[in-house]
Length: 75
Image (tube, rainbow, N blue to C red; front, side, top):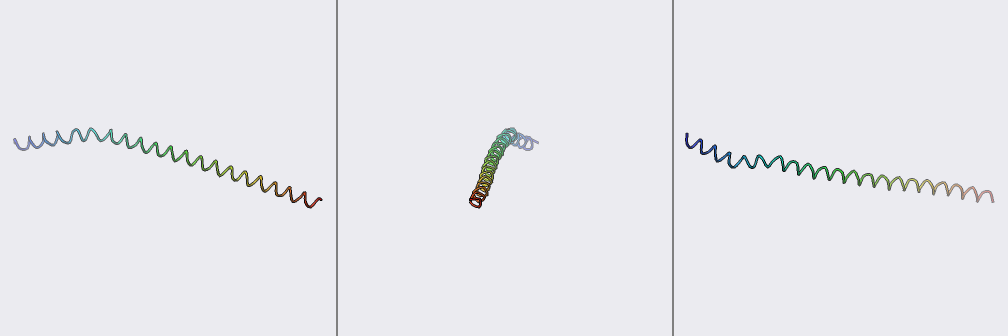
């Protein structure tokens, strides 16, 4: 029984600290994932805003072209 008890003690001495470390490591990893998700959302919002600006600019250019063509035909 001494060998079994010794083995149990060695395993507990080795595994217990490792097992206690797992939640802390998981929390740190989750924090990094959350940061990447927030960064991705921010980039997505920036890209969508830029796309909206291009669409608005294109719309303005089309309207200006139509107005200019009407002006040419009325002259």
